[in-house]
Length: 197
Image 1 (cartoon, one colour):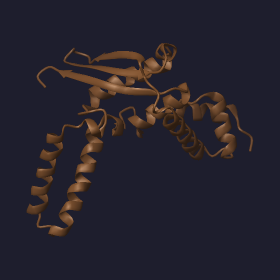
Image 2: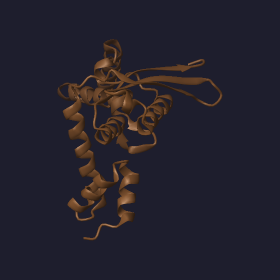
Image 3: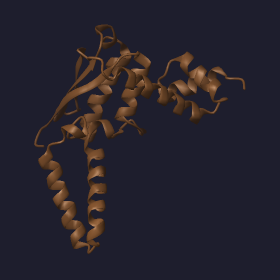
């Protein structure tokens, strides 16, 4: 199949991957756009896993102040080298994550960071709801586990659907950037401030 420059451009727009990576992915998938997107995501994930144990002692602290100055976010995004921290792609990623946090109000970066008392409180609410609905005792635990899993996916930054592209999670977006930059990148912490919130 003939891979056109238009196809490469379309794949680049969808994935932010490099031009040669897009061309190779399209060649490997015989021009199938969806399979090429999946292939590039898998490659990004593979690179991310290989680099996961490398220290991210460089990076930036990015801020976002919403119009009207009633809502603001600070986010720390780490990487391995100062060179990557200064790239346009890295800076744009940090800005986009700050805006995402402002819009979606996550509780923590990962599941491990969610306060145990918050999970316990949610568990009690779900248990009361399940008991009230008259569900059989033997399936109540499964119902509660499923609801807790959904709750954590909604409140953990890395698992949230990215506000600018709900087809991707924040983790998918991070994996794509790691694949593109070729070094470990991490969202370390954030603070969200809201007047009257």
